[in-house]
Image 1 (cartoon, rainbow, N blue to C red):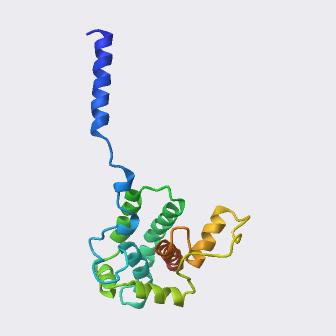
Image 2 (tube, one colour):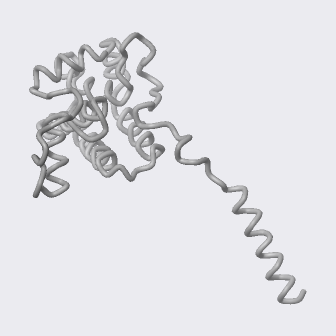
Image 3 (tube, one colour):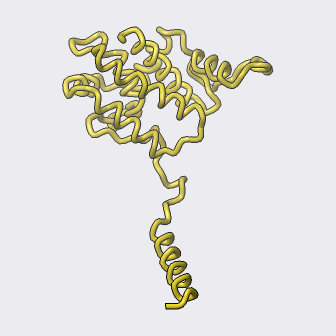
Amino acid sequence: MSRFSVLTLFMLLALALSACGTAAPAASLPSAETYTSPNLDTTYTNALPARMQLSLGTLKLAETSTPVTPEQAAKLLPLWQALQGMTASGNSASAEVIALLGQIESIFTAEQLAAIKTMKLTSMEMTTWANANGVTLGSGSGQPGQGQGMSPEAKATRQAENGKTGGGPANGASTALTGATIKYLETLK
């Protein structure tokens, strides 16, 4: 075979393989808030997304007979920290975030997941938690210029502490819950 024929054959093969591997556009991927849990129910009225059920449920498990153990906390902490970093950057693919949520969920025992499911966590429980912990849920509006001169990390920290981000109320609540979950898990290690 001539070099031209081999090169042409190689290029056609490469083109055919690349056409087979075309990925769906990013817009068609589900968001992290649409993570579908195999264990948690999100179909009841005002149900929190599974991600927020995992986070708020982690905090509320402390009030049950099946709290998070120190061993689980050691495994969960780096995963929640990674999730916080991924979502704060805004550069993570939804598939990566969803995979991370799956890893987080897999660390819980069946009893713990059943307890979280039984809690039927709603936006009302989220509001109650936010009020009890001084987290403001809402539009995320603040005084103009408040963040001037702050590093991006300091801004993110302040936003998380206040439960506010540029992504709107649900994102702010999720960010605040993630931060609170991380702090709680740090106390268990």
